[in-house]
Amino acid sequence: MTPKRVIIPVFVPHAGCPNDCVFCNQRRISGALRPANEKDVREAIESARGKLRPGTPAELAFYGGSFTAIPSGEQESLLRAALPFVRSGEISSIRLSTRPDCVDEETAERLRSFGVTTVELGAQSMCPEVLEASNRGHTPDDTRRAANLLKKEGFSLVLQMMTGLPEDTPERSKYTARELIALAPDGVRIYPTVIVRDTELYDMWKRGEYREHTVRDAVELCAELVPMFSSAGIPIIRLGLNPTDDLSGGEAAAGAYHPAFGELVYSEIYRRKAAALLEGTAPGSDVVLGVAKGRIPLMVGQKRINITSLAGQFGLGSLKVRETDLPDGDVRVLSIDKSREI
Image (tube, rainbow, N blue to C red; front, side, top):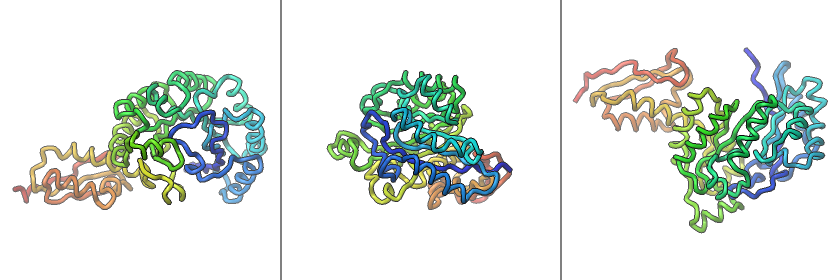
């Protein structure tokens, strides 16, 4: 079995970013109060190095901010701190996040020379009106151009999208998903909008100018988006913001923040698959569903919500779930006992 890759995170909140997006307060989202420096990079790697098992691949990841918008000398300083570890093989790869309008041929050459292998682009939306309302400062064409350039230059490409931004709708989010799929990235991250304190979006919400994108809104929408990417063979790296003490402690004032957001989405997908299978089932039936090993919690749902809702929707006598040798994600009806049919 191939050892699971270890991510060594280094946060550069707001570093280099030329815009104040209405939703953004990277310091609160990441929990980092200041941008990282060379010393932070070395210390992060050295700290992780002492905990790694031999042969475990490690990837240095610069999160937050817009890395390639940082002055080139500062970019090189951060990357140069990691270079000895890359050359020694202690770091297998480097990834970073940036804006679509801060990528060009010169940037790509610089990143490659320092061992960067993966670039994540914060596309957020492919709808001009959503980008403008969110003060993103770039266009959908910037995303297309940057994505195609990075792929041509041999980088692994990850695209990030958001749902529930100002002027966004479910239809616009699905359009964004289709446009990102057309760019054939190596992975995507989906971040439903969270209203973080000390942001323009928070003020808009308090003034009644922005309607909250709730956890339920986001779960129902992402349950449609996930199969779109899965059908295209594009891995979803993350659903929802990574939980932090700050966000869980109240900095996420409203919106689609939940520490187990991804679990909620996949559980909803399982519920929908089961509901389609149960159409026409006689009321009072005792039903047994089968799922892949380890997937019973997703089918059952948090606090058994899926079992309760499906049993009520179809008037079932009982509904049970068993592990089977099914492929991951599949749901099957194993048996229907109509002995209690009413």
